[in-house]
Amino acid sequence: MTDAARLRITLADIDPAPWREVDVPLSMTLKSLHDTIQAAFLWFNCHLWEFGIGGRRYGLSMDDDWGGDKVYDASVARLGRLRKMDGQRFLYTYDFGDNWEHEIVVISLFEMETGMRLPRLVDGQWRTPPENVGGPSGFKSFLEAMSDTTHEDHEYMCDWYGKDFDPNDFELEIVQIQLKRLANQRRKKR
Image 1 (cartoon, rainbow, N blue to C red):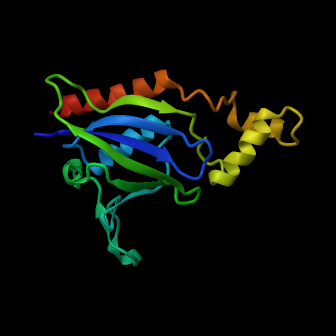
Image 2 (tube, rainbow, N blue to C red; image 1 turned 90 degrees about the vertical axis):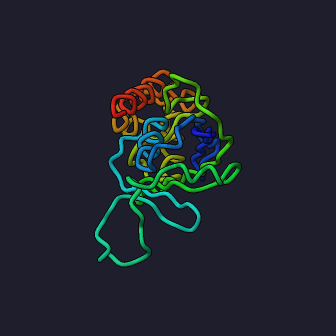
């Protein structure tokens, strides 16, 4: 019986597009997948988010009096439904202001080995944009300013970000530590 999935998560509207491949248990909730994506992309989980899967929206449980389409509670929706989605795609949006859209592809489904701790990073490339940079267009401006010491906004962006930014370094070790922390938390809950 398949009880895990390999997902490829790609940040849209950026070239080159940062991506991560992660293995996750199908027993996890969409809220836990959100936490996994936050860790894999080194986001800080300080904005609203939602998944779009099969014509339904999943996110935080909120008051239905806001109007609009129903948003299903991601903390109770499990990834088990991905068993029917091998090779399929769905959407994850983070920060409705910057509107970071991530395309998620179900690469494969597999049986977890005994003792396997998930989620875990399989692969990835490119560093993700900093929080609150202003979406894809803001990130493009940020990269231009950070890479050109003569750019009029270089000093401001360096002060704002607070450290060097290498778009080629996706900070593998930090991502692995974050995902290992999540895997250990899942193990303790069992």
